[in-house]
Image (cartoon, rainbow, N blue to C red; front, side, top):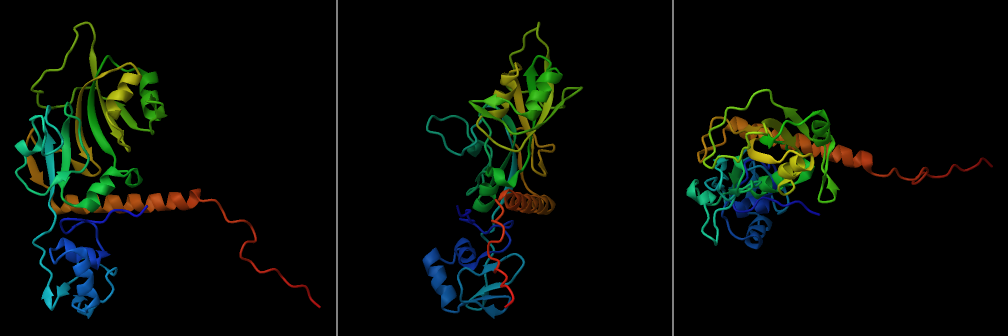
Amino acid sequence: MAEEEPRGCLSRLAGRQPIVQVLEAAGAGPAESCAGMVRGGRVAIDGRVNTDPQTRADPFRQQVTLDGEPLPLDNACRYLALNKPYGVLSSFTDREGRPTLADHVPVPGVYAAGRLDMDSEGLVLLTGDGWLIHRLSHPRYHQGKTYLVQVEGVPGQDALAALRSGVEVKGKRTAPASVELLAEPPDLPPRPVPIRERESIPTAWLRVVLREGRKRQVRRMTAAVGHPTLRLVRVAVGPISLGDLAPGEWRDLTPGEMEALATSLSVAARQAASAARKAAPAPPRGKGRSKRRGRT
């Protein structure tokens, strides 16, 4: 299946992309019109006229001109980090009138690149970059998501080993995960709705890193080993950390963070491609080789 390409804004992270899609994202017109512009010789890349709509270019590292004028980069994608509060949906609209991201982020044209449940908190990346949203949601790119998880009871070594190796969730075993039992509770702001604690049962905090993203996965994993989740806070997505953002606060990613994210995605893509090549069946021996002819 072909991977999605950026739509709606100019991706700062995708690198070289088909020039017709670069033009479309820059607002030059619909895809069909942009393809006609390219075929008509109206587009140049680094001073050389290009007539193939599928030629790839990076508008942020190469000069792309249309009719001799530099392509405007005003429609460059934005990349935001938000500390989603407890009780807020990971969407910008809701028919039932529940709290949404729109109550905290007054930026048009961005969407959640990986959601959190309403009763979960922490880091949500927001962008209009379809290229990035696709990759952060695709298991091929293996961007680890780090959670601080408060659970009921104190997991023993058997429970921790099961979480690390994988547990059965809805008939399917989860992928191996990194799970650490924390010696001290993390420094987090209090939740507006306190967790339900029982005096007779202690609680513990785990640091969990997942590289897959099933619905309510962390909660179902801890429940499967007898330690229900009481509070869940996502603190990192790949190389991007929540930092000191307070609940409801957001910020633009720094150039350094964007570079780190692009590098992490590139490395993951190469690793996935290498793994796929190794897993592919070897061609039959002798296939494609010409038979030696005997001497006469």
